[in-house]
Amino acid sequence: MQPHVMQAMHNWRMAWNGQQHRAQEAFTAAFPALTPADRCQCFGPTLRWERPGEGQGKVCLDDHGRATIEFERVAKAAVGHAMKETWGADWFDEGLGGFAEAEPGSYHYEDEQSYAEYQFDVHDEGTVTFGISYVKIDDIVTILDVLEQALAEHRAA
Image (cartoon, rainbow, N blue to C red; front, side, top):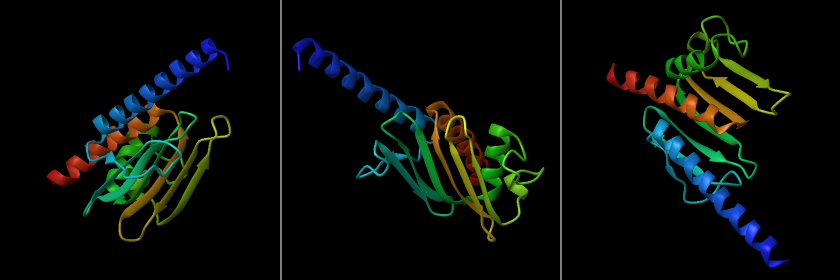
């Protein structure tokens, strides 16, 4: 490879690494419980969290610059508030009250334009396990921020 091409690739790689680092900073600013994972779990940088009574999960980037969030056993009221604030109620056919009032079951949506995937499993005991995959970083930061606010209100109650 020619030296100027090698330099251009090096510059691109450095910029890409910087973007990934800044995305992780945005994720943790929005959801402070996130910490770097011991190993990559999504073909890119991965952050994890776990809080007894609140849930656990991960946020990661793939090598195409898309973000994925996978959270388990999060309070249904908090998820419902976050989803309603972010997308409004009944966007995923969960009912007019949003996920806070959704019946137990699975809710799935695929965006054919962006290839984003949304999966929500509402559990009988009042929690939700959900995954939002292949979306823009700012969409994940938005949902993380609103979810953190909802969980903070839940903690204070």
